[in-house]
Amino acid sequence: MIKNFLDHKKAMLFDLDGTLVDSMWMWEAIDIEFLGAYGYECPEDLQRAIEGMSFSETAVYFKERFKLPLSLDEIKAIWVQMSIEKYRYEVPLKPGVPEFLKYCRENGIRTGIGTSNGSEIVDAVLTSLNVKEYFDVVVTACEVAHGKPEPDIYQEVAKRLGVKPEECLVFEDIPAGIMAGKAAGMPVIAVEDDFSKDLMDEKRALADAVIADYRELL
Image (tube, rainbow, N blue to C red; front, side, top):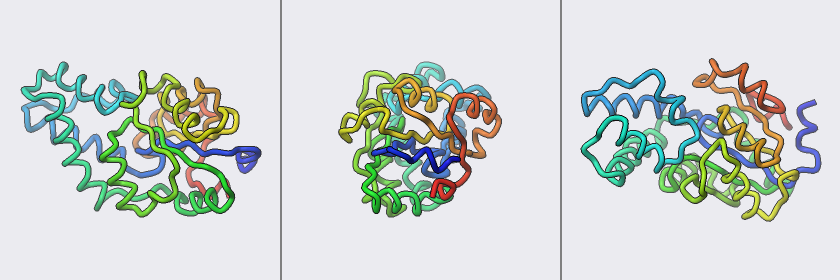
């Protein structure tokens, strides 16, 4: 029974895009618009190629692959500007997120985010969706040595929360993230997302369980 995954857990660890917020479509739209401005079509393999990379690693990848006449800071600044407006006005929370976060707070369960996104963007989305108060810790991949699928980011979230890996439950939407949680010694629940529906079989094979709505756990 899926509710049993909450037993004896002291912390819930979440990815952001595609896990807490329905935003994966947005990043593909930004990539298409951004690359189009420099005369490139968005390659079909791009999203899988950058899966799990930190915000900074992705900027390096774009600059090198597409020979962009921009500094890494300029690339990231453009992405931040493009994404914040969309996050504020076009990106909703995934089904059941508000109810689940309230449940965690009411039951003394700590919460943390481990995301490949940049800190400025994370702050903007959590603030605009009125859920910032529900998270005790936010760690970005730029703060650790290796991005997903390496375990670094979830190990760091657990460390800052003061909990053991086996006391955590991770929520992820992509294979690299699921592997990161498992490598950190934590059970992982995969969250269904339209953007990664073609990867559903892989996600099911890697994760301990799958949900479409966080209320399934309540």
